[in-house]
Image (cartoon, rainbow, N blue to C red):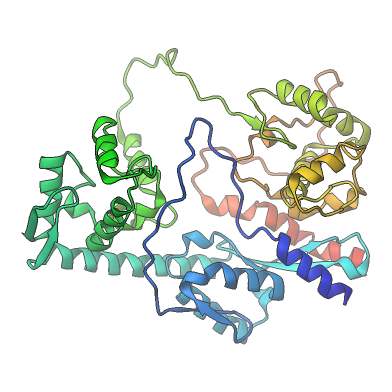
Length: 445
């Protein structure tokens, strides 16, 4: 019964995808309206008879995590998830899951009843990488075939999005009309695929009085029209990834967006003689407080804020517990996750709201940490928030300490411009954990 309660509680608190802080300077666009395109394809569980429609992907991912302790890495980079799952379901029937997946042991030093093994299926495995590349190639072939059909289609017929003009013959007729008469361009016709679905999506937004660029909702069509004209918002929002599937360039390389593919062209440019970068200013990286939304651009500022506003002194904890860099990373990720789940990181008490949890923590629990074995776990190597700049402010030693010999010589240092990804994968954190798997099991025995 206790195990069932823990599983249910974990199900409510599980984080299936990395979280992200809001970007600095970005607006707060309203929730995008998405035109749903139901699919008859089913997603099958890799271990049992469970299956769900493609649009309920998160349901199956949650099932795999809670019932079978399996996580699939980089799920968004898989070109065809149904085919991917069918393939691995067959392979798991032939060989045990441990032959393919990295095993991450949690609470390895805790009580036996709290120890759990989780499995990570990722493209570090050559077979998985090859499968993902083949699915990507297959999808690219299908997209190019669809694009050619649309380019050759002579029976296209549709009204303009902004006037009553009827365009017939080919999609290029409508796209060129909107660019010429209404200064609205979504790109060259030959760069677009699934054009009708693209136009349906845009029409749906306009019918719902939503600006295509800033995505705000307006009270009537006249106000929306004036807004888009005066603000020069007769364009789509390039940061809205809902549109990615309508551009052929997004299908060219596995895991690369059109910005990344386009930026590679810059590497071919010949270096100019003038290498003066004095007028270049980088955008400051702001770290977010562990307890509130306050942001600071330096380590000292964020530390002072947390100490003065919340009574939390990370520097003191670091000195008192003699934490190295990696332990600091795990501690920060642990605290982030507990606070996100409205749980006191000190006593593990769960609250209904973040406000109640913060009131509780401020009553003497701010500097109260649980046993080190609770948070000094491999799972907390992975950031709770994927863009957490706070982790970049951590340091391995203090400026006033004497230089000490490094005891982490077995940790590989990999250059930023490394071109061989295989080297990176062979030296990844997960592989380091796998090498120690035997040690973990020995300790657990």
